Image 1 (cartoon, one colour):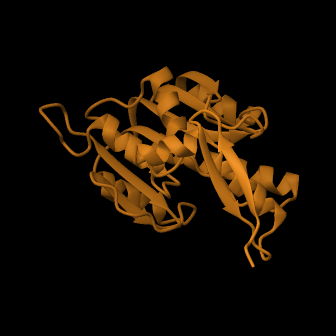
Image 2: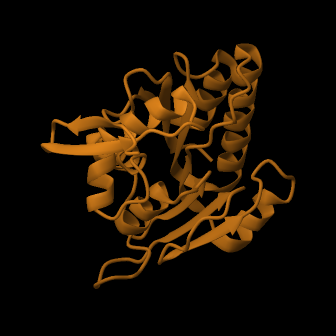
Length: 234
């Protein structure tokens, strides 16, 4: 007996992909798969050899704020599956291609991340007490940019999820303030209208400029946005 299929079309590229139905698949999973198959950013990421559609968020943020520069030293918090790491390696020239300045990229994630040429990747929980020391050892010097695309697993309880997200951002900011060189940049994921007032006040003390931005590749229905803190005061 032939299984029925659901058809989705990527109108931006004129493609049609077919999604096989599965008795064991939840309806929410089916909706997610359909969205992935019809997402032009997913298709372009595959064509360009990027690890995920999330790579475009960093590309768009950097195109706007210009914080990834050749020779720069970058820490990528929550690196898996490596989408942001690949972009950072390319933009700071961490592989030392050509005669330009060679940068450095160090990433960490609780999940294993496939190797990225030019980057040092650590499989460890960033929230563990020894994680900052591991990153500092791998970086072997001050950072110019600290990136955080970390997000805590959702529990379904709004208040709990919000507290977890804020805790991740606070920890990432604390680490950034430990390793950034003067003039450095911190980029962190936030949700639901931006940064907490107390956290935003702390950033304003530490950085010259604070901007909130939602990259075009961030899905409209997503509550995520990014805070870009520039000009670390040291």
